[in-house]
Image 1: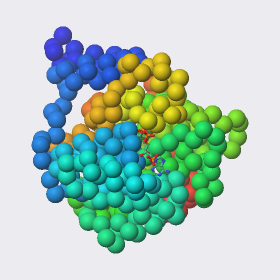
Image 2: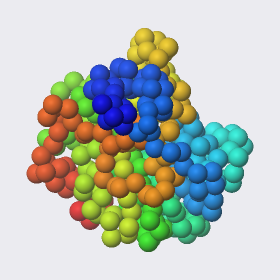
Image 3: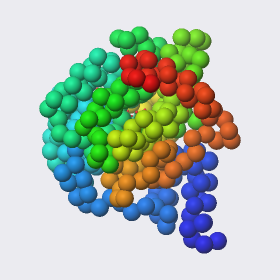
Image 4: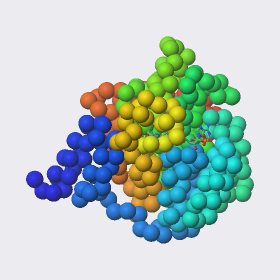
Length: 318
Ligand SMILES: NC(=O)c1ccc[n+]([C@@H]2O[C@H](COP(=O)([O-])OP(=O)(O)OC[C@H]3O[C@@H](n4cnc5c(N)ncnc54)[C@H](OP(=O)(O)O)[C@@H]3O)[C@@H](O)[C@H]2O)c1
């Protein structure tokens, strides 16, 4: 078999076997395959302005650092300004902090208004902020909190910031989770009002929603020349994993990726030249299937119904 074909087969095998592919083993192997795309060039983001949400911990912190190292002015969209000040001090380049609770749509509106009034034109948004609430929790607007942080907040924030993003070949990256492979789109119960609440289920349903809305969001933001991506980082050791999944963290600890490896594909999607084609789910710098063996993928009718709900809940025109 030719080296590139062999590399592709090995890459696919890693993906389908999950544990090796999602762990640091998958990352280490793939980096050495001839199919691994080149790193973004040093300075490729000089003069560019990039928003990173949830930049105060784990993957968001690593993403902010990597983008800063490539030359970007990083806009840290965070709920804790003190933590952000500590992160900002470690960055090699300039940054600005904007306070925003992604789970509260009023806070998202306030943050967007501040960015629209005082911020520069934007070249990318990385929707990284994430959480796995331990008990069923509602946002101030009455929506289940995982769905609010991972879907409603990012959709509203991007929509409101369109004037800053339009016409710049901008990129929007939503950080999802491989956990979404285990859940279907929650069209019938988007706010998780039925059945016993399980944190990983709520989390994975909201992450599945990010993935299934990709075609809708891509089409919605295409007139502004925005490419939309969803990426999943594999399994990386972060404070979020230690806190929300302590048993998983203990069991998998030795083979978890570090935060830099988890953030790698996000940074690559923001910095790669030419701009990668929008509309896909990415992991380790390659597009991946959104469902395996036909399990848990949504129909276009289900996507449209979910989008109607998301648009209503986020308060944007569908
Ligand atoms: N680590 C993994 O293996 C893994 C796997 C799949 C997907 N992911 C995804 O990767 C992203 C980052 O996760 P992580 O592992 O780095 O977790 P983490 O260490 O807990 O970091 C989460 C970040 O999100 C912020 N955040 C949480 N709720 C927020 C809210 N309502 N408004 C604004 N910011 C909020 C946190 O802010 P505070 O510092 O204020 O708490 C923190 O900066 C998440 O979307 C997660 O679902 C991670």
